[in-house]
Length: 62
Image (cartoon, rainbow, N blue to C red; front, top):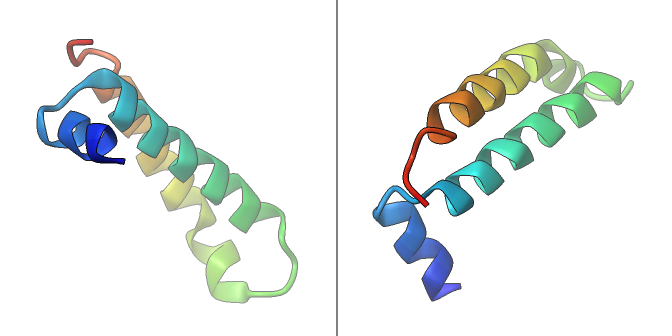
């Protein structure tokens, strides 16, 4: 866990790509669930933020 936090603080690609991937998956899950309206409402913006974040952090150093 400490290595993960160190990678986040040092702006390394691996940990930030994992965060972006989790955001994308969370956004898709929010889009597909039929129970909570606020989650469905914000699902597109969460997916979009995760996608843009993934594009940006893919240029970070290993």
